[in-house]
Image (cartoon, rainbow, N blue to C red):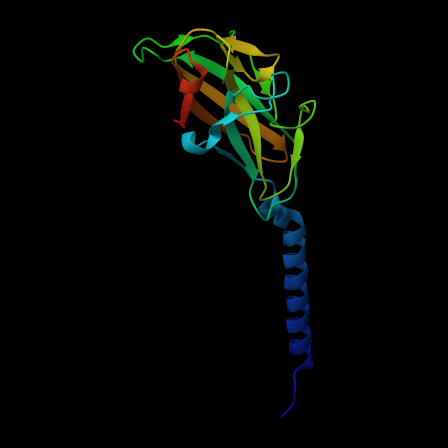
Length: 194
């Protein structure tokens, strides 16, 4: 039995070409599978909570905070320069007649929770939950503090729809809407995802 070495050589060349082509595809497109993927979360029972020892308040004063959860999906690359923005506040107390209360066409950066100086952006490790402050109320305060830079205030009790957009380098932005309710007393602050 004789071996056709030309055919063996051709098969080897085709296998080498296929392997090279697969390696090139992996280098060009495999990175897309590792791109950061941002996830935005809010659960009223978990993300609205009382807190003591708030900077600027007496240590025994209690404040109530609503915060959003931001996560870079596990197994992805670092989400560099992640920033959360508040893009809209709508008074939906009367859902038939919503009122825009945020300055027209305004977008303000949200402050990161418990990050000194509240950096403009944060690098998000994959699988680690970070939080950004939305609103806060506290003992002796007659308004809700919307935790943006610059700060914004809501001094009228009611139900408000807050729209948030989160972005990072190399990741698609994500958006979410949170409904905040407040009757004028800081302890009444509640929230839910819409």
